[in-house]
Amino acid sequence: MRLELGYIKVSDVQFGAITEVKNGVLFVNKQEMITTLEDERFASLEIDLAKPGDETRIIPVKDVIEPRVKVQGSGGIFPGFVSKVETVGNGVTHVLKGAAVVTTGKIVGFQEGIIDMTGPGAEYTPFSKTNNVVVIAEPIEGLLQHEHEAALRIMGLKAATYLAEAGRSVTPDEVVTYDCPPLPQALQQYPNLPKVAYVYMLQSQGLLHDTYVYGIDAKRTLPTFIYPTEVMDGAIISGNCVSACDKNTTYHHLNSPIIHDLLERHGKEYNFIGVVVTNENVTLADKERSSSFTAKLVEWLGVDAAIISEEGFGNPDADLMMNCTKLEKKGIKTVLVTDEYAGQDGASQSLADADPLANAVITAGNANEVIVLPTMKKVIGHPEVADVIAGGWNGSLAKDGTITAEIQVITGATNELGFSKLTAKGV
Picture (cartoon, rainbow, N blue to C red):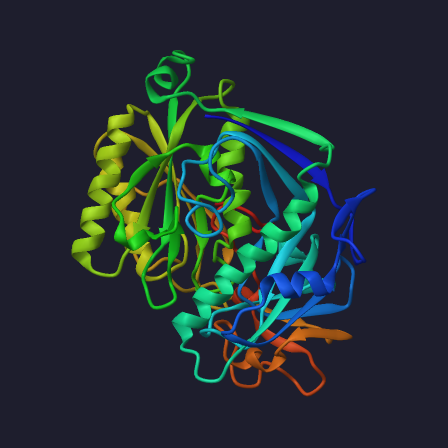
């Protein structure tokens, strides 16, 4: 697979008569965008803007999506949802780098998040640095939660697709090429470097805890091998409402720092063979099946080591340890990327499961740390949900608009792909 990503830098977003990118500014025809997105499952639909440095809070945040458009190559962006189910990850894709779609509205479940565009909360989320086009969709009365999630998921993808079309004919500011050869060729490259695979754990516990691969709910699949470039074209889509801090939004998947860093070091420090995507199910039998298939696939790849990233916490900690121990017992060294729920004082057990073989672990921080988010001049969405989303409590939202809660409420605060600023080191 050979994919060229053409980055079109967006430094500002404004409403305008035509949706276009001009001199680094993304102009959005608000009414045209609303008309494009209209859906009978929503009683109202509005578009707003949130820029870096604005005294603006977005709450609750369902998903964040980066606008990308397929210019050349097979398939299209977000296969199985916006485009037909064809293999992606090849050709040329243009990216509106610096822009993002954020979806909000009445709460779907209880684990959506907060994005502050300035103040202390802004330091914990990468989306305080993006120029955000916010889709505010309020569901019709009686719409079931899973139907609401599905409708809002599709609306966010359509919004990103609509905006990305503005970059189709624009000359990119930067072009980065990724070349991922077929497995037989990949295994012969760089014989003196260690071979490394990436085990990409996807949240798939059901009940609004789902992730999609080529349009299919990950819990309905067995672990499989994909090219890293497929992920960059939207082969993996967020559909879950897990805790905001360590949820992988669609934006996170499109820009996975683990994949990008592995490709950056490919041929220099090691030979990056490819990605094994696996799920996080609920029952013990499902966990055993998926972790065994994961270990079998990774062993088949003939690698020396694997990086394993988790999504979520608690129940998925068991999947993380099963994946780790089964690989270690096959002689394949592992490095785990996770976050911690160690209590507000940091003194509790960080993970729900552990094993002596899991002796190389990278943490993205303790999600239970408490933060005070100051009042914002503008709130997009429904601030009252601060009292019920995961990480908040009854009384988190004060009368003056400040929010006292765990950083668990902040979208991306302890992201387990490493897309954050937090970590820790042993002493």
